[in-house]
Length: 300
Length: 300
Image 1 (cartoon, rainbow over the protein chains, first blue to last red):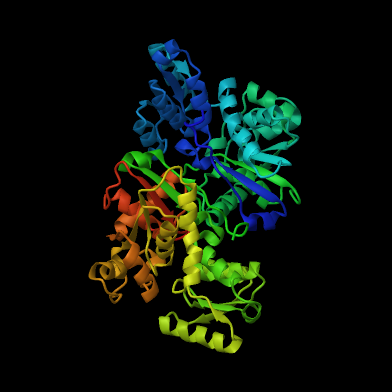
Image 2 (cartoon, rainbow over the protein chains, first blue to last red):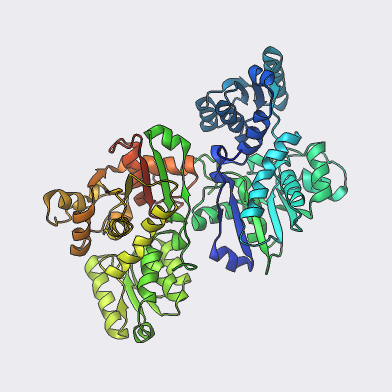
């Protein structure tokens, strides 16, 4: 992946450190290609396909960052990409996917319609489905973000925090931390309004999604059996934050650190700023997942 | 200065490179302490004062980044700071200066009132005036941004672009480029609505300011004799861009590069995106000067 994905910088803020009493390192995947860590998994997965599969192309359905990731990774690898996007998806994301040269299929904005449309494209093309997180190759790709964070941070991390949606990023973080033999405690953070992972983690079995209501649009997806299993076995804890704290944290990072981050990225920052986790005296890594937001519709 | 200022990262964008046909490197001083390169000059200047001068404190007047820079640098060095700020200055900047522990003096929002208020504080305290740009020590401090850019860029730069207001940043860029023996052409960029430097550069003598009307609030200041002399002798060219191009470029960098930059920083980016300078096949460095903006008053 070297030379294709950015090795994103780790940034710090004295005022954040002072505010929480720890040493906080932000791994800035908002500065990754397509503006999110999702590029890593898509690139690793598509580059691992054999010639025959590459020839038939790749298929995915996404209203968010994964669609852009598949479109760009496929283009770089000379593979045709088919992306199913629901009506109502942000125009800037539709344009981005189209700009990367992907074939676009629009569908009704329901989960069923998306799956049906993707299934139709798969039948038609014989292509390979690139799932956003329920796939060991995708998780391996996402794990490189945490691996770089461990390698590049100026000191060993006591804690590693990141957002949990489908669980791909944090599953990768768990595996990278183990693989490197680190003792870092890995903690997931979820919006209160989409807390299936936290409830599942506490109860020990995968819980239904319930009503999803959060500004963190990248984290509305439930865990899969695969990611639940990895997170359950490896996470130290899984905590939640409310939307007000998410918006405050998002604005704080824009204002003080000059980074455009999306609400999902603000979720672990909110856990710190809101005192949901005590990091005094600790070295803390935060995975900033992405920065794709509509600049005409900011939440403040 | 090492260990006090951040060695800010250099970031790139494939779509920017594709768009302009060159290889563009952004030196991100928006990620510097206080959110702007100004911290460099203030820190170098105040740290160079003798014990007696330090004991009497430092004084400046500023409605912008320089006031914050002096306040933070002074605090880090254990020196008292007095900052004169006009009524009407952005509340977030007033709060920042106060938060760094500086003594605040408010005055009427005119240049004369600012100078008089600063003179009064100087008489009262016997302190040292820290000018935002008309001072060799300040220029030496600002020059470290360009020096790091030359040192850290992955290839020698054919061109180095940055914004021109009072001229401190670009004077420093000229001196650093010469000092390192580089053949890089250094080009200043100015808003059309505050183009005294461009007119002065063309005519060969310092021109009056005229009516200043630009969104780039950091660049409304005229050159001094000192900075004009350095720029005249060392700049390859000095070009202008209009406010619409500045706003477009600012939004482009937020949207595509996920960086919060202020209008002044967007000025050299606008020169590229608007085709004011041909960079095809060239390695181009851009000094991104800062990222202090009011998030409740965006220009789009």
